[in-house]
Length: 102
Image (cartoon, rainbow, N blue to C red):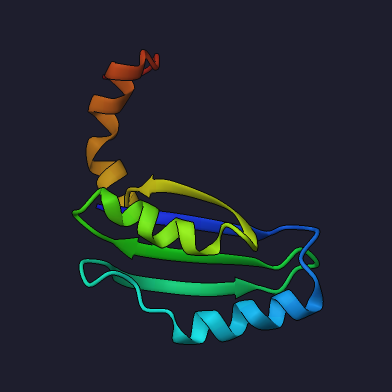
């Protein structure tokens, strides 16, 4: 399954802690069962990091999230490709009670 991890830096994080995060991130390795598909820093005033990864082990979600909780508020969501959404659309519409063509 593919997951979208959004990490928003906490407001109380100092410049020294930001530097420490960068150092830690450079040395950190994800679990062996995680395949990182993309990772981006979004240079907004709040500094946001987005990681898209694939794993079949549900415990990897915690392993990807916990190391960064001292610097970031971390949210993780399952992600589905638009190609799959389009394929499932007729069934999803019926299941969710969406009116229209079925």
